[in-house]
Image 1 (cartoon, rainbow, N blue to C red):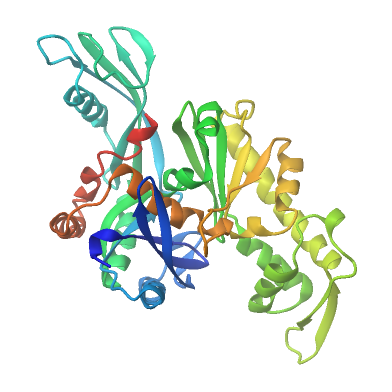
Image 2 (cartoon, one colour):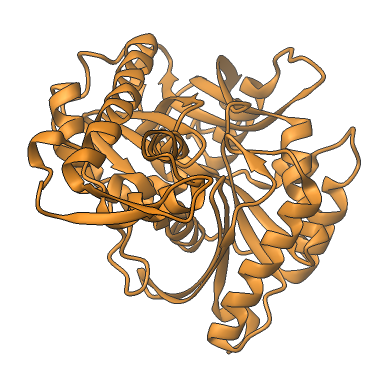
Length: 411
């Protein structure tokens, strides 16, 4: 298989690092390889140990390479975390053509104008995304190309990120022997797999309950309207199980995956399991009901925090399509029912419809491949090498300048 025939995504999470190989097939993709490794070196979604993270990336990539029999040289890397921020902005330009027809060049100029804002030196503009365009005072225009006008304005928001946090991600990927083909905002990539066009248009919250953190992203009128991070996720459930059953974290994680139920009312008193006691060679028997009494309160807390974030963002009463969840812990039986009960809203669990990745934890990785394939973010080897060189200087993160078309299909 030739290098240009596949797309590789790298999902760097707190509990797992996944390298996924996808092959574009017309308007769809095929997932042909998956490699996973424990997410050593990360905490709450942020890198705290570069060496351990590099080793985990190498392990995941090596696993994917051996599965498919190819060599991976570059990957699309998902970016998320509490350092991502959105800032409102406004741009205005005069239409340049003599016949007053608005062209792609005019749109690019007004978006660049919206980029011109004062930011702290430690932050970098990743991209500018239009909420709406205004032509000679006429608002609510999503695509002004071909229209006639004299004055073109845009109401937009800037996506910014911490230079330090993103440099650390890029540094880890490069030290693992890979080139960064492009950086992709993880919630936007996930939306390609998790959300329908109707959900994005009507208003929906996309919630990724990861191991170390939970991201909450709102889409409305077809565009991303806001994103936030809650520093709590599935690892907290594991920690509670370890304390409640007095066992090791490793044993608690296995118990969570095999026997957990998110609601006490749906748990079985007949399903039993045994776990080793901490500091002892003895094993103790518990029921799924016992486990649910530990899991449900923490899951309720996570959903309550999600609701608070939605309220802070001002969308508590403006989500007709409800909530779409993904992330590993959401595969727990009754998790969707508990979320719907706590949020008093429709809830759906997003699962990629591809063989080998039919699990809520794969949404970010598969979504990154789908996003790259759909938007054509597939640079040549020369562009990749140039971008890699541009990322390294601490005072110049110009890799972001290459991602002009980020989210453009949602405008």
